[in-house]
Amino acid sequence: MERIYIFSRFERFWHWMQALLVIGMLVTGFEIHGSYRLLGFTLAHQVHTVAAWALIILWVFAIFWHFTTGEWRQYIPTMQGVDKIIRHYAWGIFQGEPHPFKITRARKHNPMQAQTYLAIKVLLNPLIWISGLLYLYYNELAALGYGLDLGTIALAHTIGAFLMLAFLISHLYLITTGDTVTEQLRAMITGWEHGDEKNTK
Ligand code: HEM
Image (spheres, rainbow, N blue to C red):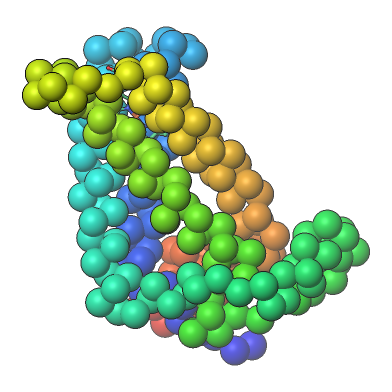
């Protein structure tokens, strides 16, 4: 079977760090929100703030990486083949049909994945990031005369958090739908699609 090296070392590092930080931010964020008590408000708030800066730094590095490597092209949206992919996830997958999209090095995400990831990068991440920073510096901005409505900031940030949670749940389901349940997970660990660990770079 053909093996393709699709996820570079930086990409895998960025993916797993982001996963860790986003899950940490969901757990602490919803505690701050008052949904449950786990660490206690003060500690949850401290962890959330430290993780927020780590996530922002990671995103800045990832943006730099996308532009310097040209990998941003992976996310150019296209409608070509979207109908086949929708049909596959709604029907074909339950009949054991093979996935209609074949991965190449130049196009490693199917059109639906590329559109979803693009929306996360250009809409959802900035929504969380900007609302989070406004939340964090609300008092300082008010002292400078930029009085903002805290309720609106909190609502925008919480909507972003729910959208991130919805993405995480669908992402966890979709990564189990490769040729085998763990194939896509393996690819994000080793870098190789259909690869084996001995050949990782
Ligand atoms: C995936 C990333 C993130 C998730 C899922 C998330 C989630 C949440 C949630 C659910 C809340 C509670 C909102 C409320 O009830 O009003 C919250 C609060 C907050 N978040 Fe985030 N957040 C994320 C990223 C960030 C970032 C990047 C920053 C800052 C740069 C940030 C700063 C804050 C602040 C300052 C609060 C309010 C804490 C307080 O009330 O004192 N968050 N977050």
